[in-house]
Length: 427
Image (tube, rainbow, N blue to C red; front, side, top):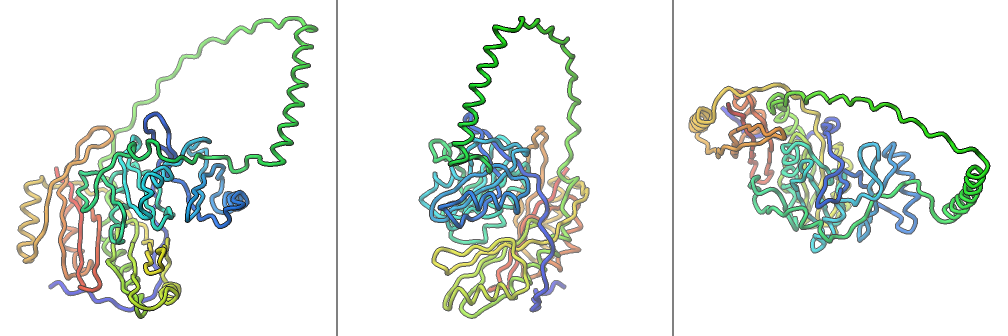
């Protein structure tokens, strides 16, 4: 028999860093290349930003040689490395969208662009540390987006219509970037002020010397014999691309997702302080997100409870009025393995319906398709259901199905109820 969740008051540290993801660095809209996936940091001294930027480039993001400034109520700077595809003069996409959506201080968005799916998350006028990422994988972009849906009070939720996200609407990114304010990438160690004047003066002297030398050579030296161009080297055609891997060949282990999320949810639910109430908790393979709202009390009470909880947070954000705290918690890296489908869509839908009828539980099922970059079409059955039973009780039941991916686990501490969403690939 399935049993209700039983949270223990544990304060052990969560697992290690988030799974590493391969991110894009730019996309093109109407002939303009925009920079994405910048490493955003708060700017403490707006009067002298360059000292702070240079220090971060040398000590925080090794190799960073380009930056972009975000002005406003919460000034920030974004760092990046030119060797990864960034170029001086590229406008930062995040700043353009922030300017276009200036009527709100918080928004959550995913845009379909030429290089993939661009995720941007701004909370209280601050670009979150993981709030500017260009994913090559639609699945990873959607997981990142849904992991933040538990946080309330978004001014805008923007996502592709085919995702069917409640209260979200699709807005083309070119509509927002057209005419939006621009801040471009600049060199971190560019010369400024007196140093720039000295370099210009030195360059002028070099130019005078070069002109004199060129004049002397032109009149005093014999004409240079023409250089015979080398023979054209035949270009070697690149090898054809390798076969496209199937999406189920790198399926995330659903047992680990269930186990790691259950542990992380236990950790955050055990954090409490008088006058503060926890909201819904959302967990994916990318990590956990939740928030607390103040009913009575003070901000310092909740901040102390978080600091003394023993939990490591990858991000903490406080609302402008100090009555809401949003946190992100990393979970251990989930392993991937090959889990090919074994049933067609009709067989799988009938099997799932029969299973949940036996459990006397409702389940929502729908078929969905995904077209890969190489135009291959893959099909799956999407499922979602709510239950009073914690993730450990679903290990044996859900893992009967090959090709299973578990996308989202949500927990409501006030009703002690769980919600599960995922998909199963079909033949």
